[in-house]
Image 1 (cartoon, helix red, strand yellow):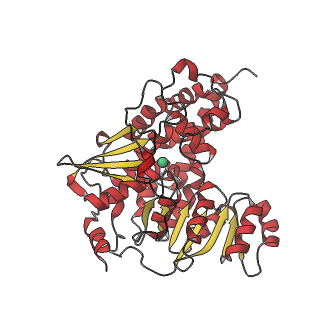
Image 2: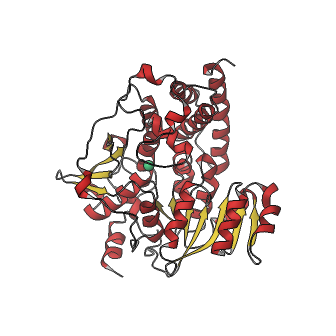
Image 3: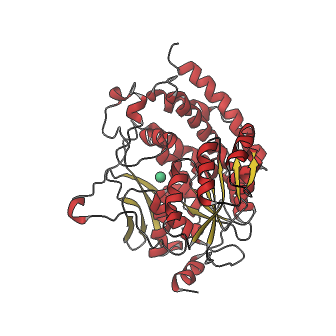
Length: 428
Ligand code: MG
């Protein structure tokens, strides 16, 4: 066991999930509940759900840097069968899955002989039960079954699908206690926090987590200018190239609000000790402040392949870097507080997180509906926060005892959100 593995096992602090107020920031770092060491196998077998999306494609870039270390054993996509088949021909995984069952036949005809073809939501879950590490890069709440399948089968989950943890926290935290199950975050801020906690120590010495945010394309804009901005403007992120859903969430700061909840759930730090700071250069990916006033930060280029590689290879780092900081041109790093009056989604999310239970599921559902409506030009950008606020105000879901209860809460919340979209929407 190397030094880092040993230290990681020691900071592991087996708190009951949901013990939000307890001063342990090490929860996301623990070795498996059975005391298992972090994975040190070779090759690391990788399954990817969402392999045809932005994160999935970048993950395949990462895997390609070290074919001796990583082997792709299963791939899944929602409906992009052509891209999925191309990936299967190149990588020869044991299995591929497509969520849309109507497309399974076309997929079967296009993949190499001997590749197992799975279909439907259960097909995606089967992919999530294979390999040593499962990357969940599905988009939105639809990723919940995949997160649960990976954890319940005792896999390490490289989590890019934050919505499943945020909306399904009560059941996901339970699944996380499965022997061998572990979450290593792919979200760049949480990957940074993970690294800062490893570097600086965890537990009661953590004073607060500082999440950085680029501020998105509308940082510094007056609310009057923002009411009716176009979809193209909202999709023009200044520093990150990402899929459309998270890019719109970045423009409203809902992404950062969701990430506050994600940080609380991953690391067990209460909401009073999670701070959001705008940092337009997107070089400092987040920070941990300790009780003695020291702050540990993680810096790297804004390239998702770094956090993806960290999660796939943990506890060892990739041997390859996708670019490095150039101190001769970096110049300056700026920080400022977010404008909470303009970007209301941030506080809506923080309030939902504090309320706990399935309130974050309603927030998330309201947001997914609002973002889809904005992308379809049915509501203005300025109506996204009001749709989310109206949805959460009508929350009425009891504490969940199963994943089905979470799905039902999401369904109810979406109905309320669609009503809000109709009321607040553009005249046809
Ligand atoms: Mg992020």
